[in-house]
Image (cartoon, rainbow, N blue to C red):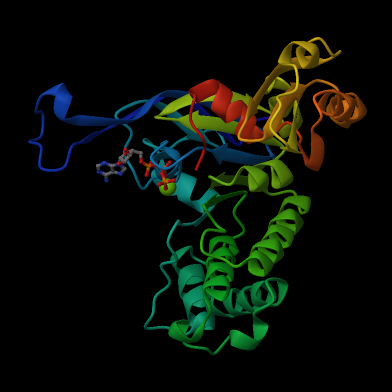
Length: 323
Ligand SMILES: Nc1ncnc2c1ncn2[C@@H]1O[C@H](COP(=O)(O)OP(=O)(O)OP(=O)(O)O)[C@@H](O)[C@H]1O
Ligand SMILES: [Mg+2]
């Protein structure tokens, strides 16, 4: 079976603001430094990375909006540079910033877009109504765009992206700016679309979102691929396992030497009345840690467990936090 997406040594260099074309390399911004990705047919795939990682640039190239500087990008086996029109027929795009036509109402936005892809008016209208229903904004069909909330505009963008029945759906940071309730509603919509067999490529800088939704996640930073795997396997790669934090009362410090000697402890430190222990054993270690605190005449005021996360992995790969 053909992969939904394949990029080989994909590279994008932007001229720095104000730089001359063909100016010195020092004036260039390397947004993608040779990216190799493969997304399987029907997969829910996440591109996770901080601001400026190159996520939008990658989506831009794959959706024929940005021209690559070097390398190859294929969508459903079709080369984006040599056959952009065929690629556009196969993809739906939800951009980072909603860009509906504000001169048209909700339904008209969809029907107009359908026409652009050669869908006849009647078929476009019935498909549009179906999608508005599916996305929970059927009552807004005649509404002006400016009367929609941010979440409703985002849903309209998804409906628009799906109007010509594409096989691959791209969503660039689809939940930024949504309140928690709207975000959860959008997650449900995306899960339903995926369950219908669509390939979904989503960018995000929310680890939890990538973890909860995606079957595989590529962690990108500064135009490079740092890791690519299922969220479960990526988290298992995070060093040190679970972080156990104990807030302590009193001044005497528990013996770090003894804490480090406990089974499964990979590192430990005490700072500002907090004992932090990384352990392969998670919560199992808590009784022993409480005993150690007691031995140093300290009472444990609070205990917090953080399971291994994509954030822990990102920190270990880059030395920086994701946000
Ligand atoms: N049109 C452009 N001209 C010049 N530089 C650009 C352009 N678009 C992006 N860049 C630069 O390329 C790099 C990657 O940007 P990109 O928008 O792909 O990142 P991103 O991962 O989508 O970030 P964000 O999370 O902020 O949306 C950044 O350093 C950015 O400043
Ligand atoms: Mg972006």
